[in-house]
Length: 111
Image 1 (cartoon, rainbow, N blue to C red):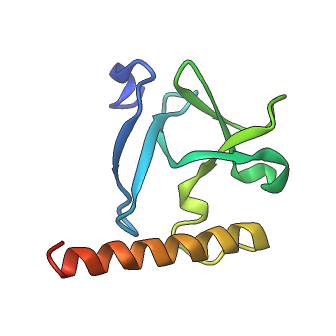
Image 2: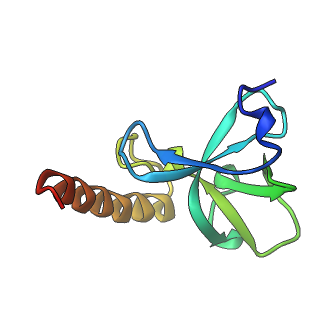
C-alpha cells in the first residue's frame, strides 16, 4: 500500500522533481505507487494508449475507457525527461519546456 493511500482518492499537488512545474499526484489502482498527472484533460484519440490515464473515485488507472477524454502521465512529457517518440508528446513536451523556463525566470527575478 502506498504512503498516500490515506488520501482517500484526493489529489495531492506539488512540483515535479525534474522540471519544477506543478503536477497532480494520484494514487494508482494497484496502491503500490502514485502517478504524476499533468493537470487538465486531453482528447483520448490524440494520445498514444501508453499515455492515457483515467480516474475513478479519485484513483488513477492506465489504459482505455469509453470517454473521449483522459489524463496524461506527466513523466512522458516532462521537459527534464528524454524526448518521446510520438510527435504529439514531443509537442506537449516543448510547450511545457517553455512554461518551465518562464517559471524559472520569474523565480530568478524574484517575482
